[in-house]
Image (cartoon, rainbow, N blue to C red; front, side, top):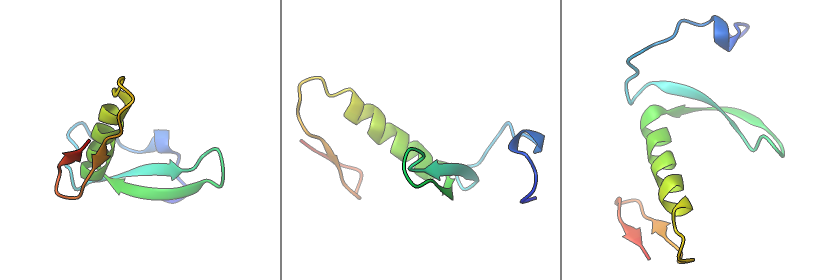
Length: 70
């Protein structure tokens, strides 16, 4: 499958949180192809969403035990 186009692969309509997705890290610098579980992607997206919504200029830090420090 390494030589298959992404658009040629079969689509899943019910992915599990343990499924992998394809990501490219640092596309503007030195790109690297990697995999990420959907669970980790969901966590990262939630963190980015919350950090992006901080309009008061405060710093928010996400910790490993799913808590926020302001």
